[in-house]
Amino acid sequence: MRLFSVVLVTLALAIAGCGSSSSSTTTNSSVAAATTASASTSSGGVNAAKFVLHTGLAFGAFHRYIYKPIKEGKLQNPLSHKLTVVKATAAAAFMVHEIKLAVASAQGSPSLMKLVAPLSALAAGVKAAVSSGTVSPSTLATGSSVIESIKSQAAGAGAPITEKTPAGL
Image: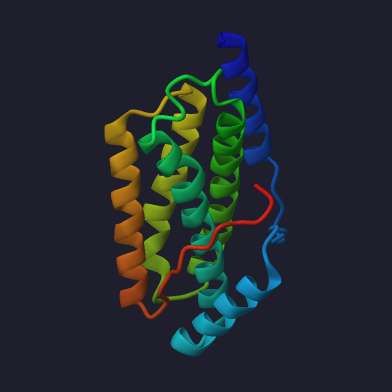
């Protein structure tokens, strides 16, 4: 069991470390187009549209593949739900990557600059949870409340975030 955890953590860190300056996410093209069009009309900028897309994908991955399985108890015994553990690990790596892209987009928008620090802290928290191999209920609740706070602040800045479930996880 310990070996399995080490393999998963190593895989997650390797995936999280792999990144490029270009966006290469696996999404449903109609979802991406709808999100981009929605953000472009509401806030008027390409950076805001990219921000909404990347944060929506990151938060959707968190809620579907990490938050929900932990709440349902599916990650209590990793050997009984191996696929769920693999999906949660991949979602964590995906989430960190999407947050990096969202931060880059937020830095190009004066109205979204205030979200750079909370997003960066969220990414660091996800990395720490993956490297430790465990997530406590209080950490999970904190992560969820940080996400809700970021969503609220983004909506106030004219870039409302709609969570999207990433395809292919």
